[in-house]
Length: 416
Ligand SMILES: [Zn+2]
Image (tube, rainbow, N blue to C red):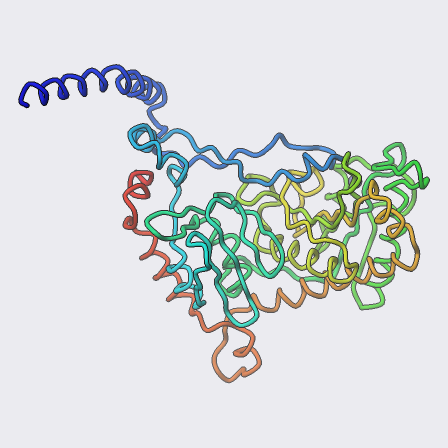
């Protein structure tokens, strides 16, 4: 028996040397090459920046979160020792549990039939979370996150950044600290123009550059009727460099770029609204909380008015969004490559519905901005009604407490 134990012990040592030592050495070598690696929080990688909104569905649909965090030696070591944990938490990123989020936002958390899915609710607001997803579903819209939702220790976890940059603006907007923008002057950007036709449906003789110009002019007229100032980046079939379009919104309050989509798969259909990936280093990121509210407002209003499918809120480093100094979105109003949608996009009667969706998007965005007012004491009964009762100071204190190192072992390791 003792001999057997001794054999097992020897076998175990040999196993260690053969399988683990090279990996540990490689990690040690990598860490010594890059001694600052453990201190860095590496932002998620995003697809190459695009200068022209691409016409293929494949590149369009790329969400922002294919993050492969790197650089944390301890976390790598943990992942090597316990491969089953490898894909869970991203190194160097802090997480909150769903229960903590429910407490912070004064919402109710309901686990679903599958243990790794849950819903948060408060009044009309419903947010769904599922482990492994890189999005939450708010009302009926998918909203992409920077980090995947993690299920660990029987609990769902969401990164602190996604909490602050997605859930807070949507669910407790008065907690956003940035100065609220005004909304009076709107710049409408009909995409493409001149030598750049954009998407084309040759069978129906339609081009994106002409359709978006028609819709932009109708949209402009409707906004003016409602008391807004509205200007176009082009009002005829001329070509304007992408980088010159956001510059036209320098003294405005909002920018919206109108496009029609196209895909190799002619069955693809529906509406997509884009904003910049959050927390990147472009001037346009200064408006991240407002961009999120705007993108949600336009997607829900446009799909409601047209009956087109809701393909979700998306993010892409589009040139027209990167250098904006005001909040802005890019909307793909429907697919020109889909016969049924192309006919509707070109139908003057249906264009009225599309424009109604855009106008409702502006109005919804304006209504949401009001919610960003901080609470001002109880004598404003109306204000009291529309603002949640979460006090900013208490929220900040609770958030600090939840962010302090505790929770699962792996979160601790990855925070080192
Ligand atoms: Zn386009």
